[in-house]
Length: 297
Image (cartoon, rainbow, N blue to C red):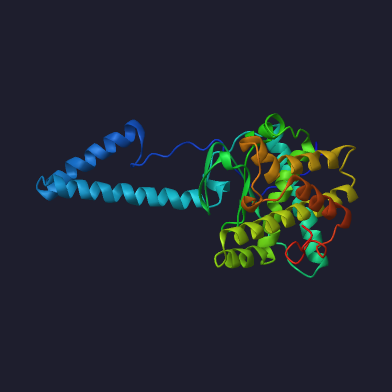
């Protein structure tokens, strides 16, 4: 894929260098001295009642934690420690910029306004609008805060553990998560979650599969435009198809357990994921991506 030297998205929060926050006021040596001074003052004010002093200090700590929680969920442009760009973060920002361009063009053509999501780069663990998450779950999208979360180490796992190498394999992953953002903007995500809360686990899983396959389709639509812009190179689509196959429920379950249980699938089989991505790639339109009203998944 032709990505070097191209525009990078500015809607990126790099949390990989964020330091752990202390749970007391002004952590470290200075913070310890400050707390000692507070204890001395409180001792005089409360007549030496240790119980009262303890309650006050706990309230101070809770307030500080609440303040930190608010900071963590604000725009990182002013609050986080930025990490110097490396090749993978540069690549991710270029791909994210491409999704901005493509979906803005498509939404405008359909008389809609594209609301931009934000890409969050993190390491190991992250606090999202959907709660705390570990990198073990892989890249994900949170509809509560319009953010795509990616631990860049996943891309090495994609090559080493899933046997899906190539830059466009990585691009497919980001485009798939942005596909969930498109579903959120179109109201599909909310509709599916509402129905899932009212049906059996098997039916809810089927809806989840349809949601994921539609995100694969939307990733394919994005790839259609990348090809139109002449950013693709020979072998790119094969790399994306390889990644789609690698994360199929049947393949993952067979590798982990030795067999597959279709009723527990939540993302679709390798064949389904490949087929819906390729369908989006060849069509390049929103209209043919209805995975909810078809028996041919």
